[in-house]
Image (cartoon, rainbow, N blue to C red; front, side, top):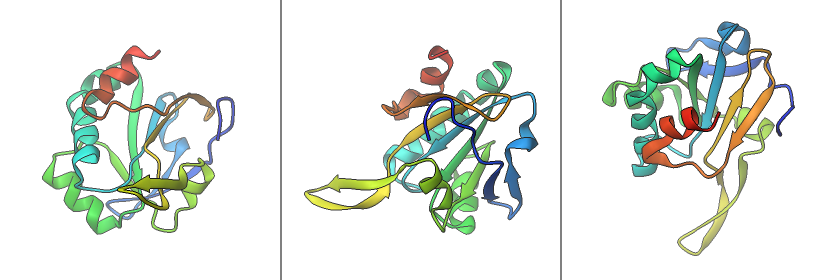
Length: 149
């Protein structure tokens, strides 16, 4: 997925088991952020930054949706534990990760394996990718989005 591409209509299933579609957010921009795993330090910092900046993001016309390969149950616990006010999508089959090109080879602790590369896509009101943030500042991500426009 690159700037100018049309995002898929069906995004996936949220922590409540509901199907999430881009058309659910008509008239709003969508912050679709991909992260590796619930309850890890960097992912928690990013989610909490977006939680803390959620009102400002909404006032600027954005809706926030997080995506990881974790299960619906994991997302539900993560959202409850950190009082996350936005939707988390369980991409257990990696369909969305692959569609957006964020499921890639990664190197960690000298080992190479496949995983989600932390990336945020800003999708405009028409479902088109408007911006991509690849160098995510986890602890200040909401400001990074707000100041990037």
